[in-house]
Image (cartoon, rainbow, N blue to C red; front, side):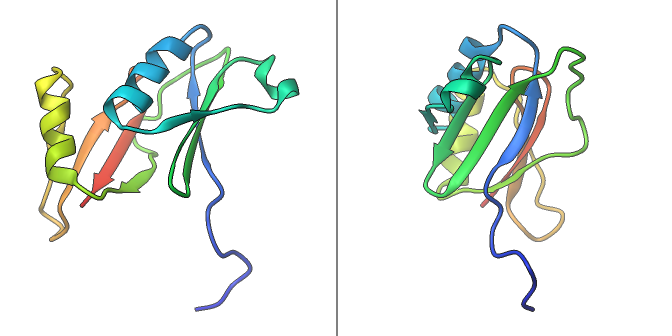
Length: 119
């Protein structure tokens, strides 16, 4: 079905101030994404942006931060099985759920935001 949109440019998640190093450890070291530079004016606000192929996740500082426990991005993975193993080896809780007929798992970033990983 054609409509006015053809893709999602990015997903914005919130984080508390000063959490950039924890975000990098999770999104780069665990998920395998690459940090991309924020525009100069936006970099002054804190936060960080990450990319993998055409997928971008932006983490922005929210002074009234509350993690997104239900709302979440769903990321299609090239190798869900090994990603789940990597999380578990590093002590990160990763809950698999194949009840929908689709291989998927849920993790939380270091700030408690829910992320769905889809095989």
